[in-house]
Image 1 (spheres, rainbow, N blue to C red):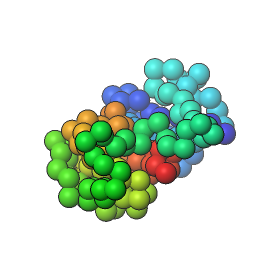
Image 2 (image 1 turned 180 degrees about the horizontal axis):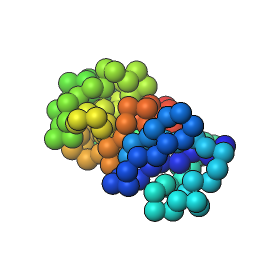
Image 3 (image 1 turned 60 degrees about the horizontal axis):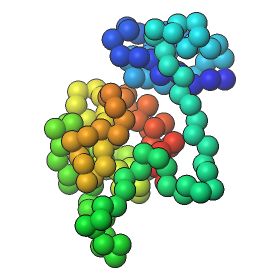
Image 4 (image 1 turned 30 degrees about the vertical axis):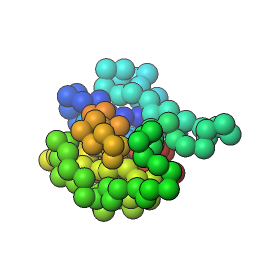
Length: 137
């Protein structure tokens, strides 16, 4: 079974008894990216590498932040990406990733760069949980 993200501005998609919106992750036995290339993109799993203990999209410490300083409380950070809803995502809190909501879409950001989304386009809440599962420690 594959996982596919419904692209932006392509309408909805019905799979089984569920209707998906732009940004949603659809699990399907069919290769949706091959069948509908303008509507879906395959979500690739990034296997953990022994040389890289930190996920590729995880926030990095800056040179100005000493190792012994505690992380900033990500639930208090403000951003143009939307309202801070980090406390609604325990994985984000544990991984020191800020989550913002604007309308029905969610975006994750590094606390050091809160106006730059790590997730690119906005995701649904379900898709954000999946993204955090893949990218948070």
